[in-house]
Length: 245
Length: 245
DNA sequence: ACGGGCGATATGTCTATACATAAACTTAAG
DNA sequence: CTTAAGTTTATGTATAGACATATCGCCCGT
Image (cartoon, rainbow over all chains, first blue to last red; front, side, top):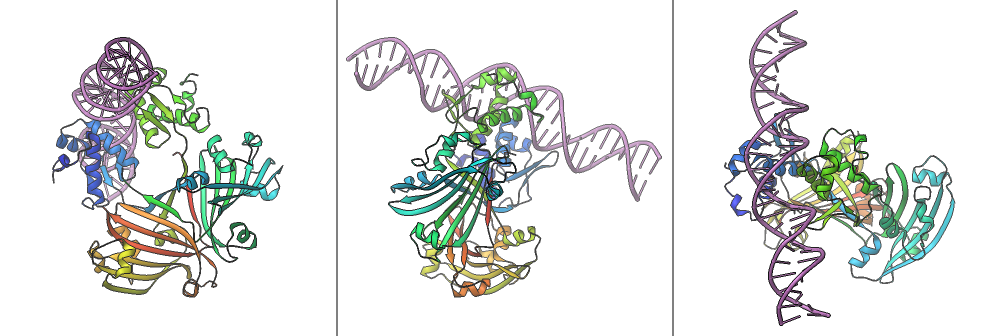
């Protein structure tokens, strides 16, 4: 029953982290199930013999991590896990291949600058006419095709892109390092390779491919839309959740 | 140059949120690029005329969100975005279909209880012999096949699963609501439908499918391994990042 | 030139206190 | 019995001050 029973086992160094982890463990082991009211701040404070601000910091972090819900006057409650959230880290492809210890290769297939046509505007989600760059390129790892990239960049939103040299720099890397963004949306789906994709990725027609479509905005202003096609049997997206530091 | 210039524009109500948002905006608009040293706590504190704890709370939250990096003696710095992180929310399938406003259907295809064989142990990642339940079932939306599920549950880790009635409750929903977990890993890939999958999902042989494989642990103890196969052209996983509350 | 020691300094944690605020509960009026 | 007003209470925010800790840079001795 006592909160402080096992606090000594934790050797994290700081008090508020100890408190946070003690509570976190009780939640994750199911000792305090969803809906359970965890002790009031003043109770925890007495158990650990510390000030309320310290307890508050621990509970605030748990609330920020969506592990508990705090309600004025009522107390703090263990939240029901709504979904299997997962943090999917999609690195820049150049960095991704580098991290795998393989040689990165890049090849610009085509690059066109034009006033956005109806299809471009639809894809980017802009209504007013604007200039765009349309890029198609290929990434490879150890000289094997890794992914095909098809990208549209809004030149009005990213004027610097006109000066970038996409023959050398992959547009994804360039954008990631030069253009700040506030929102991104990813959609993941599966297709089978048609002739064009099969040839570009050096796989058979009809082979499965993983498709990632990403839209990026800055303050509601569309910046770029990209479609990445990966060989589906060789590539996997991996997401891990809750290492709980 | 002044930090407080535009703080009046923010009408969030509380000071530390105002400070956090002021800094966040400067980072996201690129006014303070990656690597830039943001003002010291005592400088911000003087600009807003508040105490250091208030500034500290704002900066701590920014650090927790990985927007800045804090180094003792050196100061706080804008972090370079390492990857296009995205929070992928994978809801329980029953809830997902319900949220789409479609009628959920569930059908248990087979359910076997056995001592884990080599393949089962390999898949779950356990070394010692244990009992498992192997389940195959189908989810549908408005009577159309939605996904095929193939699951293994470690009965030693989840003894309650022996009492669950998987003829009625989908195992994913049951587990999500009854078994607390601490870690999950998802792998997403693409395959083409073989005859078995094509028949179960009512699609053509050779059609693309999205595959999600999920492993779930509690305190390093494997709980369950599941493989979900979706029709790849109809189903998309969508992840959005940084609504910035 | 090189490395060790040391002080200055910014962040990290913690305290005791104060007042604000929202929501649940109580009580009184219709 | 229903509604409105007031009270209580737990959390939310903010403060001023204190000490801990990591580390950057300087000075010094070899």
